[in-house]
Structures are given as C-alpha cells and as structure tokens.
Length: 219
Image (cartoon, rainbow, N blue to C red; front, side, top):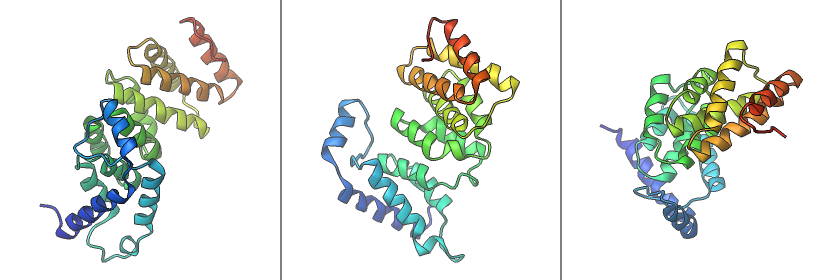
C-alpha cells in the first residue's frame, strides 16, 4: 500500500499539471494516436522546471523525509498519465535504479515520446548504460532499439569509445536497424552513426564503409 504522504504528494502534483495545461499540444498527441488515461499537454520545459523545483525542495534534502525521490519516481511511473511518466524519468536517481527495474520500465513504455524522454533524461546516465544500450539495439522491439541508439549517441558524444567487440556489434545492429521497418529507429540509428564517426578518423572510415555496404552515405 502506498505511503499516505506520498499518495497526497502525487495528488497535489497532478493538480499542478492543470496549470501547465496546453490543450493544443494534448489534442495534437491524441491526433497522432498517443492515448494516455490523462494528458495535460504540458510542455517539456515546464516539466523540466517542475522536476528541478521538486529536487530543490527541502523535503528531499533532509534525512527524515517520509519518502525519497526514488520512491516518488517509482510511484509516478505507475500512473497512466503522460506528465507523471516524464517526471519519473526526470526525477529518478540514475545511480539508484536497478537493472531489473529498468527492464520493467522498458516493458511498460507506452509511446515513442516516453521512450525518448527515458533515454535522454535517465538511461544515458545509468552506471551500466553501455551494457543496456547494446542489449536494446539487439532487441526486436521498436522502443528498445530506439532507446539503445539514442543512448549510444549520447555515449559517443561524451567520447566514450567502444571496444572492438562493441564496435562490431554496433555496426551490425546499426545496419540492420537502417534496413528495418521502424522510421523512428532508422532515424536514431543514423544519428548514432554520425556520433560514432565523430569519435575520430578511424571511426569515420568504419561508419562510411559500413553504410556504403547498404548504399547509404554518411555525409
């Protein structure tokens, strides 16, 4: 059973979403088939501001707090509310979430938007991010692949170079994704190829050679 204080806090959070409501954004999402139980259409900058406000709250800086950011994130993710799920990815401490919980969240991702928010806000910062990213790009699930390539893009941008095995795995899966059925994954895979090439001249040559094999050019 949920902590009563946590339950009340989430209730107040949901009420605060009304003030961020953007009907046009919410309607646009519904038109694209993104059907949440509740969707206030709050913009990402507003949600990012809300997340920072929560993190800066004194209640999360004292030992006697009734619940932690981890507890709050877990509870928010369980809500079938767009804003709650995005906030969960913004608030979850990356060094506290276990791989098993990450797997559960991945299975429950309801849309491309939430997949991308999870990748950018949380997955890229996981202590075991590379391991998960390579696991995801080898999956046959669209959102797994999408998250995997987005995370690898961020890791490459941060100058994290893969080892030889990682390079071979990445190039194989990147080529497979570029020939796959999902436009979102193809775009993410190509973006990752650009970031891979930026690691250095040797990487650029490997990326160009791989793409040439399926009649694509990097630049």
